[in-house]
Length: 263
Length: 344
Image 1 (cartoon, rainbow over the protein chains, first blue to last red):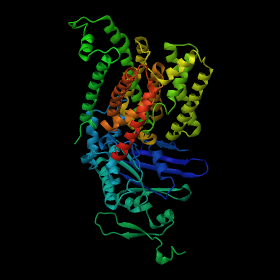
Image 2 (cartoon, rainbow over the protein chains, first blue to last red):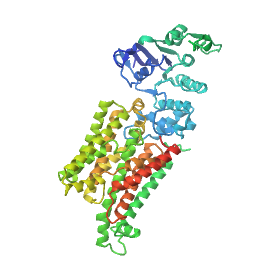
Image 3 (cartoon, rainbow over the protein chains, first blue to last red):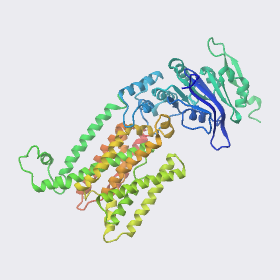
Image 4 (cartoon, chains in turn blue, red):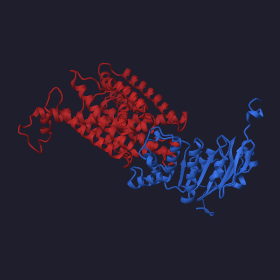
């Protein structure tokens, strides 16, 4: 589809809802098989808007090139359905694109859904109601739903933001596996630079004034860039883990001792 | 663990059981009435063309069963099935278990079409066509109004339905006000209150086609309704053309509801209450919920109509009975779902 082996590419894309305030301007981004891209930026700077553009849910105001992928799965922040379907029923819905209008899911659709649940470690939950699951479990089910659609690209909106540390690890580990083993191109939004450092190969940061920066983790996630991004000093702490990424980021919150809360 | 397709086997059993119950109730209802016929005799008469019974079938018996009761019972079954299926569908599409055909304006639109037809002395296919046309007009207006208020917002769509419902209800009152109080007004009032008293083969054949086609297509789309119930954005992300599909589904609902209103007036509550009963029985998956709603609706309305025509010397209008029974039943169901956490 594209000249450079990317599964999804946008170039010089700009988005504004009102023509005055821009969410992002002249944004370049490409997602490759087996590669994970983390999208970082403060609240309200258009991370989710970007994901909606990549998922084909929103046409950007302008774009020089917009090569979306029809095999793209979208994982929302939370399950928003009003009815307590079983986990298997929820994952089966990921097959919608492959099932004709007046048809029901077939046996092979159920098998694919089960395989997706297997891949996310949620197979034992298949018969349970989605409403009876914890936030972390639901997130894994939503990822399974996106996987069930045989997608090449996976877009996740803050997949780990509402989870405890253990579940954050579960979701991030799963993303790594999906990229390495299934060669899926992944993009996810996050507020945690450490999540990006842990699993992502590339990062896109959405700076003030609708500017963006896209590149390898090492190039983009620097102390200086993160300070510019969040307006808060962030220190890179080297981690001594062989084979692992080399540093973690510690934000320097203003504590009581600094007089921050007493000002 | 229930692992076949969705919650497959238990609900299939429930569906089969319900279907048997419907057939049984229908046969029993054939014998019940001012001219009582024992159940065994009813079965004997039904199969008379194949196995001639020992005692030959009398003209009165045959007349009561085939000319008077059978078309009425079939019409009640069809109407109950259609209304409940429409209700379950609407609740899924609008992601709201408090929606019924009456709330979104289709019923009152069709009622206006019907009253206008009666006012001008139009009957049969003309009345059906008029009811259907106004039902469609109502849903088109709902959509147009929704576009003005807030595009693609589901709550706004429901509110638009409430507005259009109010509008058409006022128009119905206007027609009643204009109608001749000696002649057409009683006809309109009795028709609006809902009744199968005038049921005959003519009416049945008139509405059977739109009802069966509408219900059949809705049943075929039942898995898609699961996806529509996720909300627009998620459904779109799953590759479903939400706007087009919802339009199609609403059109089918309108066909079914308008056909029912055309032959038997406004019968409230069924479309709202029955899907809740079905959800308790087979769960929220619309693949099971729609067939179950259809069968329970058929059974429910048949029982109510049988009560309506037998309990007192003069018939009780159905709309009154369904409201009197439906309202407390609905309150009980809501209490149960709130406690059991069975519903969303």
